[in-house]
Amino acid sequence: MNDDSRYHWPHKDLLDVTQLSAEDVSHLLDLAASFQEINQRPVKKVPTLKGKTVVLFFVENSTRTKTSFDVAGKRLSADTFSLGKSGSSLNKGESLKDTALTLQAMAPDVIVIRHYSSGAAAFLAELLPCGIVNGGDGWHAHPTQALLDSFSLRQAWGNNFSGKTLLILGDIAHSRVARSNVHLLRMLGVNVRLCAPRTLLPAGAEHWPVEIYGDLRQAVRDVDAVMCLRLQLERQQAGLLPDLAEYSRRFCLGASHLALAAPDAKVLHPGPMNRGLEIANDIADAPASLVLDQVASGVATRMAVLYLLAMRNEGGDF
Ligand code: CP
Image (tube, rainbow, N blue to C red; front, top):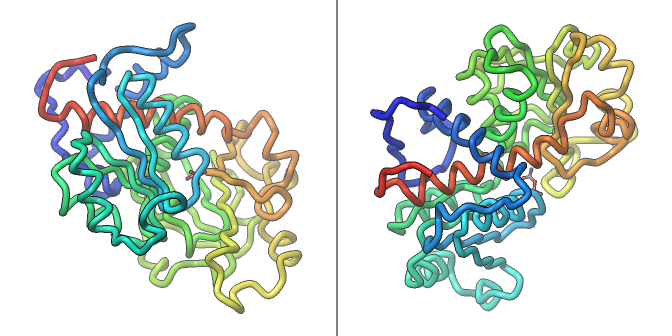
């Protein structure tokens, strides 16, 4: 853990990694490492957040983010409860504002929100006094995914990110994961490459601090890690991809591509994966794959996020 006792986490909310300083990130990842140790104990529970309440407000589907925030809260002894669109009064037409005010009236300490609209987390952060965590909003941002990805890479690479090269491959246009990761990885000193069909690159990507490739064999050469992205079929507009078989032939990461990367290169995927479309089945399960490490890192990283937001006015240590 960062032992600089003068450090104070300054943020009420976590809306995107763009709000974080290098010191914030270093402190958060060090704290996650401490929590990772708790996750390896036979009894994986500490009383740190006893009496705190965490709401998981997931208006869009999730497996990893929702369950790992739930596990993270419970391992710190917080009370967690969930609200989704299905089964809530959102389905009767209640507005996001009224739903949020209703949740606030129950005095939660932190609300984690996932929403299909970019800006939904920021809307709640302005409206409510409790801490808000963005669990993914539209195409905009997924800060805890980027933080957990860097936590996984830190375990693989040690603390030395400077001079490493990482390729982000696939549907970048629709990816909040890519947007948050480009910012955080560049902050940590990683060279970032993007590889995608032109129709799946975001407008303005040529102004991002990245190298852009259209050919996977060139893009993957000598990289230290490849982050495959899910082809977001539910967000595709007509005409972006004429043929999924052609996409897979040109952009699905396989063993022959990984052979061109640096020795011991790692493979990441935020999940859920379309096996055989953006990542070959054998690569998803290969020793180089960090996919399940990312899930484990998600619990530790989200424990750190919940701790920092829920305890921000209380000082102390865990
Ligand atoms: N990576 C990620 O956000 O996965 P879920 O959609 O399952 O939460």
